[in-house]
Image 1: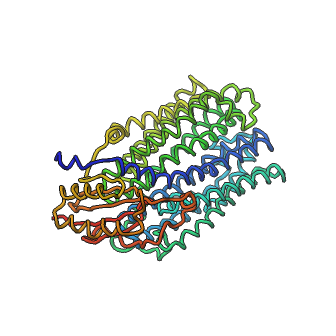
Image 2: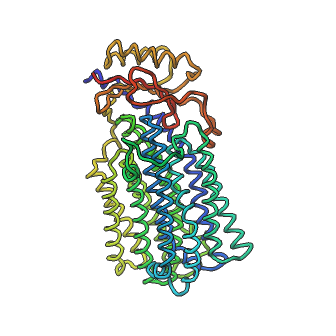
Image 3: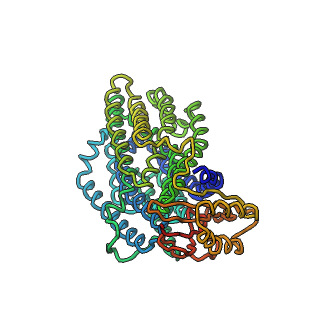
Length: 573
């Protein structure tokens, strides 16, 4: 055992994971900056042009928008993770059928929910605590939102699916276009033409529709797993419910946000009427801003970890969890420190004049910012669970959040007044974190690294001394015949190819899967230009061969989390 453990060096695999994560993270951050700032700009335009009463209507309608986000995330995350697993095992035909059926399910769900809400929109708004002052504004905004529900859902789902299908660059472009259209629509509609609040909702729907049109470019990629095919289910295919199951934690999260916002509006409207709803609208925009950083650093866990999981590499999944969490904290912490120190920086965006809002908002902003740390921690763990087929535990954690949030918010309303929703949300997040860390045993890997099923894990640059070390390590765990096969079909062809650039960083690993099969894997990144990183252009002409895990004794080549992978599988003895 000691001889095997001496072949474990996490450094190079971890470096490649971080390198790969930036392919997902940088487009996600830029896309989310545009995507989340556009509704903030919409709120600013409504507040400046129409006043604080119409602005408060946004808080009333936002729970409906979150319901469509739940539908989009269920389809997008579930289908995306399933496709990532197909990428790991190489089953492209199954991925295409799952994708087609998932898109149909998303459209049907959006239409059914929209029609039901259009029929009952007045009772629905009264339930959502619309006040007599903002009722007409809320109804106008809601009507436009419901009529545009299909592009809203498809845009939200497409973000996840196309990212998991190795096209984060196109997702970035689509998000930027959607945001620019939304912002221009709000500025022109509100500030120039002085239209009603429905113009702001129309600008959002139009932006999402433009993004969906841009998504169509993805289907021209010859190596795309997402293709529209006959929506049939063949023998061995997962059902649509099974395929979307990994998305249930994210969908429940948005439903939780919906319930949380309804309770929040109930408490705030009861305490201070329209001023309370104005408070809620400002905090909603703050949450949108913080989501840029919490989501962009936690969501890459899903495609990264699910690909390692599909490969059967448990050590890799743990490395993803650890590396992405540490990186996310480094990005999120400075933002939180600034906003906690000077909350007035965010308040100034909305020209707040109401005395009650001026008095209560600074503390609310501080506690919501601190809560973002717990939100990020929860999201990272839930995304990891979703990627590794442990969705049930993630669902339970969200159920705990819902119960604790409602109980704490309503229970504290008579004690701390308008601050009750923020205390309730933080307490719910803390309880969920503790549950996941203890019941899910997710402490593992955050501090100490574990080899799990890795027999060899090393890497470095491909100089002669390094290759000799790999050969020695391989002989410790594989027989002479298998070692020769690895060298003849993987290592030597790679060293002789153009892919072996000077100072090329590689990781070399040998894993033993749960079924007893063994795989030797060489991963490398190459030199990636900023243009490739942002626009997702192809990095070379390497053929994408079948990468099925049951192809034994032959080198299989593929893209793996935006890196390149050479792999040879050996059947269990």
